[in-house]
Image (tube, rainbow, N blue to C red; front, side, top):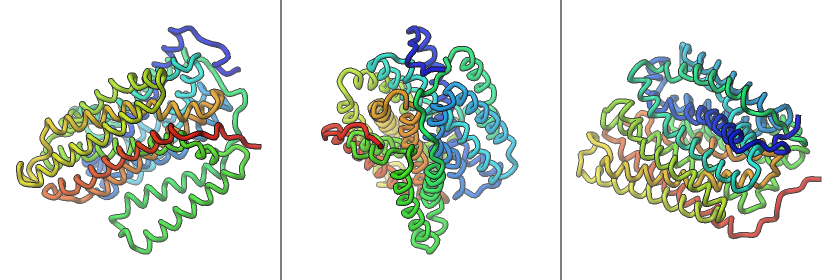
Length: 477
């Protein structure tokens, strides 16, 4: 079996492969956010305290983020189609078991297993797509479409969740994955060509275990901080543990022959900025998503379906501008789309701050109304446009940093950054609103909008990175 990049497919075949892989990615993003509108019902159904509800999302995203790079390396070694089919199967079985969960601990554990399956989908599918596209321009366009699908899937999750909750109950959020995955498995087996890297990396087991421990510690502190106290002994021990794990991780990665992440890669300003940008974009996205859907349900006392529908401007804007960004990156480079992304996300956060201040000033009644619908739609459209413009240049930077035969590893780095941002964003937003009454919700939400603005401004870092000289691809002896 050779790498698919050595046996070019016809235009029709490779874009059919692109569509199939994009649907696998759609599942990953959808399951990250589909539960956001149903967290209250899930908590009641499995007797889970409100402060612990973010774990229903982050048990999935933390495991997902932790295993992405290893999954990419395994796919490069043993075959991408095989690993993709395995991941789809694990994902489907875990989803069905989530629907049968009897208590909160069981559901959180099964969500973690679901994350194992999901980790085999995103970087592997991206590696397949990168290797079937013969030119840089076509690859950039494909990455733009890829970014659109991922953004739409994450924004479509609350809409799909609202529809399922209106027709069924919270268990439908999970069992719906079964028949969808079965269809995707058939198409993958029939159409996606087998491929693997001609020079796969060794697996980095110590690095993988350290990464899992590090991400779980950081996200755990963010979720449990309010409950344990941010200055308590437990929290201080947690901070120290996180720092220690980070230091040990860097030391180990500098010593092993095939690390999960080349530490020297971050000497490239463009690459380091791209990874930071991916984290910032998805912190902004997940904070906006959770706070918006919660505001509509808690403050305005509307249905889960109404909360999901309110996200449509963000989903549509992401879908429209991600392919446009891919075209711009292919023709003119990453700087322009990154600047647009930074400006649009920052502007969206500012609109949310202004609209929230209008509510708090007494214009619409604190505790009885949320943000004006027109302003909310404008802000979500701006943020969605920023996400659309930001995804392609960031993903392209990560993939272009490594040779095509290491596309699984490159896809893992970019996807890990995105999922880390999602995990942090959900943890931050969940910590802000846990146990907050409707009358105080908008005051809390204002803090979240400041986070969104900060994330937009942070995207100027990868823009600056494109202006600085790069030391080139890292080399190891």
